[in-house]
Length: 489
Image (cartoon, rainbow, N blue to C red; front, side, top):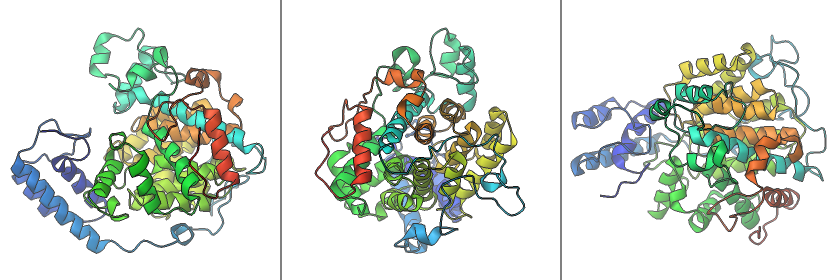
């Protein structure tokens, strides 16, 4: 029998138990039925459990997913039509100058009351949109690619494995690409590189940007804005995916939602039906283009990200996308890194698990000069989550950006060294830090030269396109957001 990752009922159900508990629902009876039938209590770390389930066990998993889904449908509240403006805790998000202060905290302290390590770097001081915007976006595309590529070979590895591999080559604290040169064989047996990524992402074999979903989704969103403009709907996103995104290039929540579309499930129910990954990181990694094309306007960026995210995610999964889009929009304007993170926090509910985790990451970054200590605390506090869940990854992203204080190399190396979803976190950190750098030649050559100004993809005719061309298309969509014919890269 063919087994597909991230889709088999017997692999989804344990994840659903965890997710339902996070949402405050009682699943004890359903979980007991599953265990009594011989089901695995712990969800698989990867996309599929090691053993194939019997037809009876698979049938029970389907039954339980449906039952829990019905409970969720009954409890789900209608989504607001204009979510960002209703959820904002302050009507206007500050995107220039220093971060807002909180009561009882001295001026100049960061979000959540965390003191920045030094005065924030970043923010070019130029008008958000204009002749320099293309250069900022060019640096952001390069930064997203470099950060993603840095994290690819160690994706899925535990924190101790990442540290051991880097230390074995004298690359700790992390300052450059991972390499397999001179690493003892027994260490690689214990902590093997990511099987699919290592052949194209270690220092000795990088030759352009290989295909990755962290780059595919920004490409898709260029097509989305080209065809539908900034007033696109969630149904427009769904149609575009079916036309341009190969199903095998989707993972976790996106793969489940894609399957739901093929089965006739309409959006936004696609995000809920048999989808235990609805609060994972997938929507956050789709947010960049919404931020890049709304420089200096975090609220509009978050509104676009919301409509995109609702195809696949709910709750904190959506908030993660809104947070990222708003942070990126602020960084694309005149904000420094600390003000950018404040703008990101300003568009999500302050009492959400996502917001609390982001504030915790920022606080820890302000309290410790040793970033390893920050990471250790984050893993101690958020280690119960799956490594792809948005909550721990958003906390780590915010911590790394805060601690790096706008420096590009420090931003991507810190976030990748923190583990969890290394390539996705590296990509988002690289996007933000690239924008803050202001132009592509401000990024260190060791990160950009191996990219050879090209990326591989199976999306929309973009294969082999240069990052300079992508920057030009993105800047054009910023200046002229009306629907156009599909781009010709």
